[in-house]
Length: 255
Image (cartoon, rainbow, N blue to C red):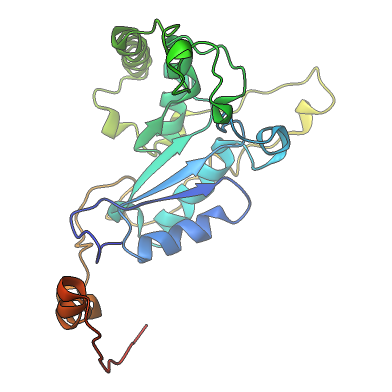
């Protein structure tokens, strides 16, 4: 992808599940700029109900594992970790940041501010409120405004700022990866919840102080693109691209 567009920011989306941290480490080693951990609650209106309800794990589990694996392999500083999956409040953002996320994705709640009523037929071109449709008569029913979304995110940011003030945190960057700010709530009046152990989720790897807990962009991710085979292929194929004539070449491919 970087060969196709060296200036592009490449982000790989992964669904939260057991072992997602190992895959995220591979994504980082492959020099992607970002990795997105998607929780099981997310999903477009076109997704099958079985996928929406039964695929993946909560984003908290996937994010925590990803953060720990990246830190243990000293890869966290070179990649931005994103998270999404039914984020709704500033509290969700703060918890995501504490567990290791740099960026956050909102979709369902932002759509609702624009008038979405969750009809679950985005792919049918029959959206009743004119959002997910190209039908002119249905699009006339759309009454959302950009200001609605702006206000929504302003209140999200305000809640984040309030919670950070309570925690004594000035900058959001200082919040990322500080799992010691979270405590598991002890539940004793429920037979199932009383047996939960969240210590693994809130585990902080014992690493050197020089190991980054968040993205700090200190490593060169460009790789060796100047010597990539793509440049030779494009140069050799110029006649084929411009005059549609046949070209032949003999190249050594090393993966």
